[in-house]
Length: 312
Length: 312
Image 1 (cartoon, rainbow over the protein chains, first blue to last red):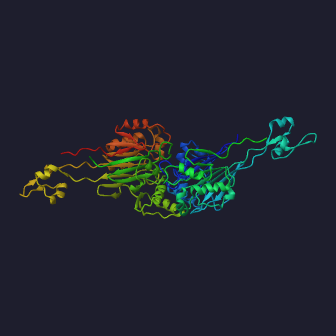
Image 2 (image 1 turned 90 degrees about the vertical axis):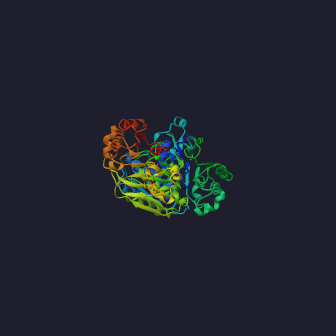
Image 3 (image 1 turned 120 degrees about the horizontal axis):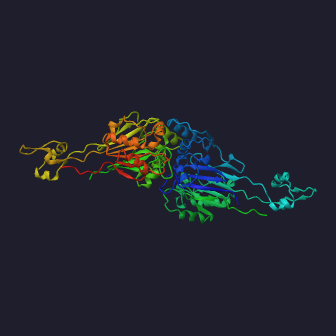
């Protein structure tokens, strides 16, 4: 079984929320870490609704400074303070968010109980986060104001030593680290046992790309090539392609074409314009071009990649 | 039947929203006018949920600049813009809100489609709004930062001319306006018919006081004396009186005592701390002191005053 890697949809609506759909927010969980991507109005309530522990969020990524992507952040920060948070919070966004937050702290005469590190995003394909298992880099969107997508990639895991081989070949502890990295075993008698006989492939690395908001562009296609899950905005259906172009958004068919060209495993569309009540036609239109298309629906926990059995 | 005068509760929670309770917001309807008092995170979604037409809001009153009382305003303003609003919006608040809004317009590179008039509140008992039927004045709260309550008072209506008297005394049109104001009728033959014979009392004027957030204070008791409905925060139950005092909030028993001393018709308590799940004990504790106490519950449309039959 591969470890957890999924995204929980908290908001699926474009600019205007409806009575049924909130604006943009997702919580990506990788192993025991949770990353908040976009934080629209109502995000903290959605997190409570879907039982996501607020205090587990240490990293927030804001795609851009249109209200439907960040307006829930001040409220989340106030709540962190009221709950007595002490742990540092990292906030990644295009320049300006710090100014928005700090004027509100000033006027509410409040000093937050925890430090906030603001990381300003200024270029696409920029590494912004790394831990022992995962790295995150920005993706350049094409929108009316500076906007970034995010690519979350698992680091390649070590090879797995086959349990039965440990006793069979009496593998000494001091060689194990090297064998996990691909070295052959050198036995006590000098014999060399090929790595392929004593290890199996690790689980394949998985990757998730979050791309919103953006006009249709193939500029970042190389970067998202073959990702397990591509979230791509599809604000409009094909019939509104003119409006999409004018507002620098993408249509269903465009998102599906991009997914096909990039050879991704699965496409999730979202950021639906409030003018659409029913979404099944959205999926159908995209699936005509790229069958592995799913709809972003609030509360859904969407796995990134399928848990595949290791070979060997 | 008296015309509509009621308040719809959109949020009843104190600082931290819960999965069931939103933070502070109410829409007061008087005749065909609607006034938004406080606009916490999620207000625009709550308005859609409770079928309140967003575009009918032309006046927004913000009690103070703690996040749980205004964080939904930027989103509502963005939505107004996206819906193509042209009508002027009046926003009343302590100084600073304009700065909060404008930095967000600047960073989203957006010029709103409609004019916004910011009215800065700087003193209690200040008239801030008046139309032909209603006037609104501020009430000085006692809180950690400048905070204002709002008193909405109907203007006294004219006396009603009794229909049967019009034909019986052949009341000429040019005297009607004066009679409605209390003049006697002067008949064609010079006889004087007492006003009390030809008119009946108008419906009594109704009044609603919104008081949140505040420490317990009797400073504004004269101003809210005898109001039909007093909304008063009761963030804590009596057992947490110490915390209430420290945070400059009010308890159930204090709100009820104030209601009793002010001789109001009905008390509605709200702004409940997120630590309380169940609210029935809240009402009980207040009702022990002031029996005409109700709980603010989201979605409730609470009438201001009882529709009473005119006398005569």
